[in-house]
Image (tube, rainbow, N blue to C red; front, side, top):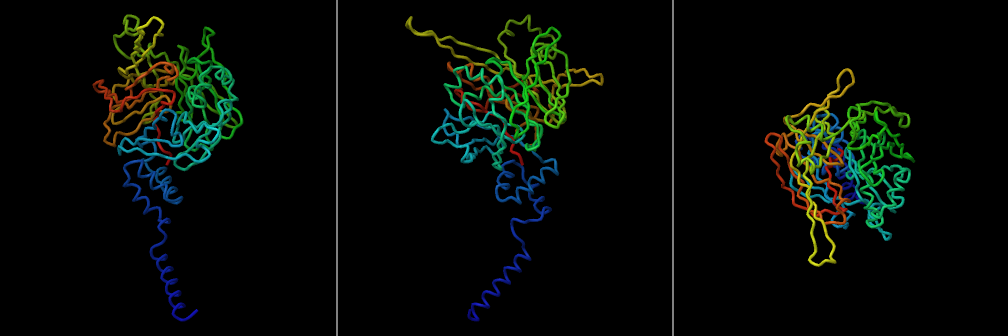
Amino acid sequence: MNVVNFLTSYFRSNKEENDEREYGHWDQLPFDIMEKILKQFSHVADSVRTSCVCKSWRSNITKENNNTARNRNAQVPWLMLPHVNGNNNNLLKFYDLCEGRLYNLKLPKNMQDSWYGGGSWCCGSSKGWLVMLKGSVFNPDMCLFDPISGIQLPLPPLTTIPSFENFLLDDRPYYYGTAGLLEFIRKVELSSVDARNCIVAATFNLDGSLHETLALCKPGNKRWVILDKEYDEFGRDIEYGTDILFYNGELHVLISRDASFATSTIKVGDDDLILKLIPNNPMSMIEDLEDGWNPEEDESAEELMIASYLVESDGELLIVYKIENFMKTVLIGEEEEEEEDEFTYNPVIGFDVAKINHDPSGTMRLTKVNSLGERILFVTRSSSLSVPATNGLGNNCIFFVDDSDIMEHSYHPHASRESGIFYLDDGRIERPFPGTKDSIYYHMRWFSPNL
């Protein structure tokens, strides 16, 4: 090496050492500096973009969200869009309400379409995790998937659910393939964001009807734990699964009979889980909440459909009732031999909200909620949540999407514009979302990235 090359190399090396000592590496910013930067973020998309830069930045974002009130409970969720006609299920599509932008996230290779078909299908979401299905309709793989970090955690096979065999006897799974199983899995709920150490609760279709099986597991378990049936005072089966939600570390389950409020303890591995059964007769509850309205005297009440959602909002446990009209038009062919066809439409006409109060004696009372204050609710069958009204989307309102049982309409045309915003102060409904033609592939849900 000549003198010139030696000196050049020497000074370049010293300069790099001095630069590193003076400025440091860009991916090793001190947390106090990173914290000041992160506090300037107003949308979840900013955090997602930053977390994708490197592991240290993602770690800082997670630490910041854990240490401040600006965490995932304050994030306006993304709207996860359905697969279009069963195509493009190598991508997950999300719509950001705050930024008005559409994001496409590519699935990992092991979740994409392969020569033997299938791809992956999302059948639920909870606390920043998606529930994914892939593989044969007779024994599909089921896992939790974080689309931001790419982490996948296996769940027990569906073949360990006794009602799964009965569901396969129906022709829908054969007609739709793995996508047809989306109606078997009703809801999946995680006890915490830490999915590796959480309890997973799920409701599954019991017999092709609205009856459901309640099951529990931990990620990595080989089998689902099936809860025994409960019975009311008349010996009738209590139907699980109108909705389920972990609240204060306890699993709350809406049941569909006028049974008494009940509490029990269940063993899940080494953990004791408190289970609370909440009676839910929507028609009678709304009758109690709505002064002077008697459904037995209102002929239109026979055409009402009511969906119930459990939501935690600012530390309180709420039941949200979505009220729909059921409308059906029979289309008769011009020729005698032509078959009749049906056109169904379920317009949303309003919402009611009740707060669940637990008396010291252990009994439960419902109190009508007239105002959410500075809060916004996002409800759907897959997941519901509440966020502060600080993002220019209004306040004291409920964002909702069409989450009707698509299988009921799979052989008939079914149009929908039933995604929108309900305002509690005046009962007004806005429908800013475009209309859709429903199919088995039409499942929208709210999703809040796990950061």
